[in-house]
Structures are given as C-alpha cells and as structure tokens.
Length: 317
Image (cartoon, rainbow, N blue to C red):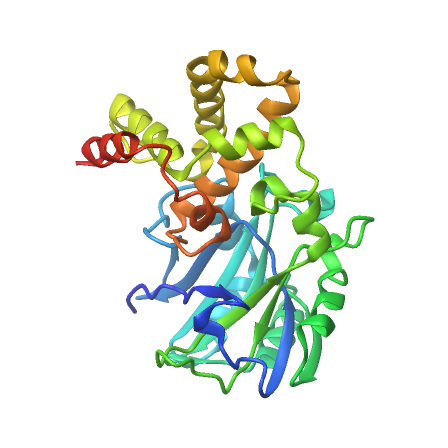
C-alpha cells in the first residue's frame, strides 16, 4: 500500500463545505494534535504523519505505542482487505489543554478499506472491540443548523473536565462538494473563539497586548523565523520544534519592535509574551500541517511590509 493523505477538514463556512448539512450528519468530537495514518505493507506496520514516513522514528512515543498495542496489531491483522487507520496522537502541547488522562493515546477517527471509507459507527464498534481509544460520535442529526451544532461542541467527552470542547467535525457520508471532493466540515465553539480571540482574530474585547500581537505577528514573520532556524541547523523543522519557534518569535518581536511599542502603549510584557506564544503556536502547527486555509494563517497573511514578504521568499529559495 502507498501513503494516502487524509483530506482536509474545512470550516463549515467555507465554499468547500457548502450544503454539507443538507442530509444525515454524524457529529464527531475533534481532537487536535498530530494526524497519523497506519497500515501494513508486506506485514510491516507503516506510520506516516501528514507529510512523511515516521515508521523508524519515535514521534514522541507514537510509533512505540502502535507497535506494542495488541488491539491495533489485531485490528490490522484480522481484516482481510487493505486497511488504513487514521488517528490523532495526543500528547501535551502548546495549543490546547486536555484532561491529563487523555494524553499519550491514539484516537481512531476513520478507517479506509480498499480505498473506501468505513461507516463511522462501524469504526467506533471496531475501536471498542479492540480496546482502542476513538473520537466519539456525539450525535446523528438530519439537516442540523449551525446553532444546533454549537451545542455539541461542549459535549466532547475528553474535554468534559470543566472547560468543555473546542471543535467538532461534521461528517455527511453521502456528501461530495462542488469541487467533486469528499470532504468533512468542522466547527469551533463561539465561546472558545472568544476566550482565544488572539488566535482566531476576533477583535472584540481586545486589550493593548492583543492589539500589539495583531499588528506585529504575521504569518510572514513566523515563516521567516522557521526558515532562519532551518538554515542555521541544516534540517527541516516540525511540530516538535514549536517551543523553539515561539521563543525566537517572542525575541524577534520584543527586540525589533520594542521602541515602537513603548512609544505608543504601556505594556504588560509577561502577558505579551504569552499571547505571542499562543498565536505563534497556532500558526506554526497549521504551517507544518499545510493547512493554508486555517483561520490563523488566512487572517495573518497580511504581510507587515512588501519588503518582509520578499525577504521570506528569498530566504525560502
């Protein structure tokens, strides 16, 4: 079997998701970290991230987890057809807070057999049968409204420790969009967007530090830092380098823009550093996932200057 990338899950308000609610919809909790696909090739287990083979890596414990999980091996062995498993590998990270017991597990969310997607309810049953964690189905609704779907965001099971959920995925198994692609949609909760407005570019209730981050932290700036580190260390960066990227972006903004900032505002620099970290992490994750249609990248794609944009392009070449 060859690697097959999982399709992008588009925001519910994108053109790619038009009319997805016009039929029976499965509402699934969304777990947000490292998307991996797993299958066997000549009886050898293969593990791929979104862009590369990580079968020989540790990948923060993911590969060892797969190779030592009897349920996963049994699932791969017992099905007679070509089977591909799609997961999220959840480990502690910068973006989102989950309950401590939720970390260091795989969460199965889709299975493909002979290039066809398995019914989501069957995926859930197989996961239970083999003692595998999975992204739960929260509801099955016929032609739901956006308002109805918002209610389910806060029912996500692994986030029910006081904060509720953040995202859900809407899966219409009969849906093909106007670009003739099979795709799913996702919804982020209004409350989460408000509480994390610096990540999602919601300008209501912004304080001084948020305005500074909005002005100076662009996708171009993050990309410039990523390229600078890659050239310095002669390697490609990935999600595990996000803490280093955050530190460099914080340093770059505070040292390069401090004079302009202090002339205009009285600033809580501790909070400023925290906000820079939040937004940088979200942009970097979407960059490494090639999620160019994310809210974070789309809204920060207004390069600070033409000169900065040209610098980034030149550095990339």
